[in-house]
Image (tube, rainbow, N blue to C red; front, side, top):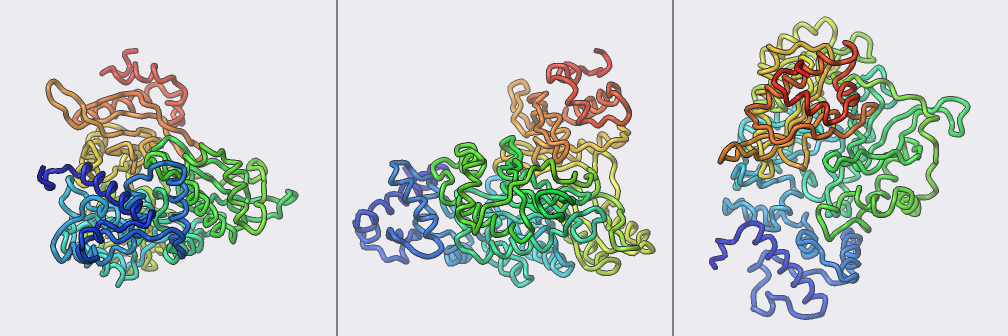
Length: 603
């Protein structure tokens, strides 16, 4: 069989097998395949495996992998590849691929993600570059620079993500290193933005300006960001990892969907802990697997957060699953051990035990404004306002980016704040300048206000740019909004999340209406479509959506969503009842019976 005829999955398996065999031979003191064949090191892209007893930053990972092997278990191909060569040591290989205008294959696809470059074939024969922006904050000059890079080497646009981040798409093989180095010249890094690393650290987008916040999360996001960048042992985790800080403001950071969530709380006078602001520790959030982070009953002073996060990561590295990628997230270690054992193990790496303190003895969190990331809102600074800009399913042209940077410079403080809702805020606007800001945003073809539907519309990249997605989520999201705008008037906000695959980048399980992409049989054809989930939520409305409808063709989804909302409006207990509250009052079968009828009032 011609090697070029192997499928990518077959190539990846064979490369993983060969990497494991290389390691096994080296571990027994046998010559590597290159030595047997008389090849020079430069003739192969697979270096000689490191010997046992490796010291330095990789030792923690090396020893964890060694324990798996000693137990008679098999490392995943990805773990075997990491064992042969640390993924951060791939720059020369990446440059060689660029010089040859060649995209990565096999293990290199994962390794290149450590530098922020994702080969997204077959959706696009191109790289996508994902950035790292601590807490989602970016200066206007950086925003302009990102736009220039997207023009020079990308598709002329950028996508805002659900981790308060940006992505540049349609990058040619020859231009990958150019994008990474140009971003670094701007002070924007990509290291570890993909693969088995800690992703972009998120925080409250209104940090430092929110009248209701308990604490400004910017310093903690920044400190965690730099701790990750400067500690090599934090690369090559069993799987990806998410960390978020919520300061208790009006706009949630969705910290309970992260592996580690730090939630600000206030303790009043007369409690066992001194009065003041603390963080609650939450662990194990992974909404795509239908789990929220659980409160661990632990109260942290702000200066404890980074050391505690480091200890948690060390335990995860040592004991996370390296034999099954589907079970390699922190949630599954917590499921296997139990939360109590896990926290106690973390404490062995800390100077002292953590403070146990019941959540009920903390003061209630300030209320979340479900659409506080859209529109004009007063800041804690007298006479200053922030404006939430509506991005069309998270996408901006480079001209729009330059225009937003100009608005932030002229009327704000030159700061752009990305949110987990695929939009952004411009802060520090004087009241007298608000009319000019609103007009300037509209002139860019963007909005500063949104109806109850469009303001909560989130869509992942979809199959136009992601090989895992079953549906074109962004275009379908726009079709839903365009269909509903002239037909539905609502007095309650509703969040609609469209995700293309079970990885759930758009977090469909926590939407009021969640749409999961799927292939749908229509006659003899298979068309793009969705499974429909209802009743998800976060924070005080935390809940995992229930599947109510299955295999709805994408062309029918706008009408189905219209029926859902019409039925809600006609049958809610009062005009103030939320869609989420309505859904949770009724069993799944009743909802299904109502929503499958063309006339929602017929039952």
